[in-house]
Length: 268
Image (cartoon, rainbow, N blue to C red; front, side, top):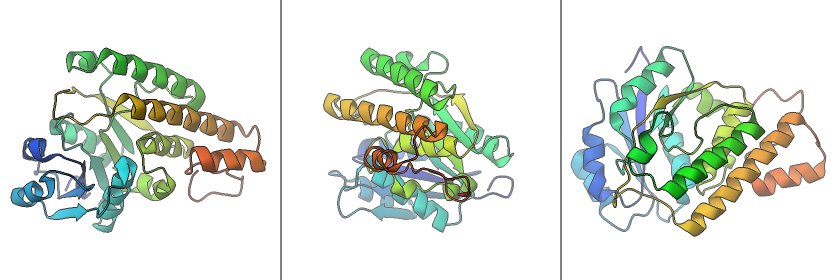
């Protein structure tokens, strides 16, 4: 509990047996109320490790639903448990749990409703072992996104994210992709809805056990990011609200809908 707000950490897990204990061991339970682990059909003993560590809420997908599908279960479960603040932490120990205090307090004190742990602020990304090609791709995609979405974020691609309950309830993230582009579609929804986003510097670690996607998946992801950003731009500018734009929104970013002036409920 933090300032009377219930804090839940969600762990989207896939083959995290080797790193889960180290990640879980650094979670600050002086303020964290619950931990939810969602296993996306791991091929190792992630579930058994989670139970041995005493994680009370372990959700097991009967089939692999993808990174985005995993997050949907994470957030849906956290909200059902009464979370006021939800922080997504990867159980592969790529992001340090020691920043949970800083991220949670920004939300609990009403300073920001969304906080991202950025690997790009400072010089932590390359020092932490991020491959140069990934760094260049991250910076290039972020530049395009900032131009199209009209923001000044240092990166959109971090997996370390904190949200207030109000943000998660205001956007329909369940409409998003089940793949990696989910993160960017969700950020598009959040920004479109007018929520402010904070970033804090986050050291990162790249090592053999840390999760990553291969070149072909990265390419698909990059195109998905760009398409999502264009749909956001077109919606925001209301360049075209006809059927063809609605069709683009459905095929490129299912979460993005044309908003009429009278629509004041769910965003995107």
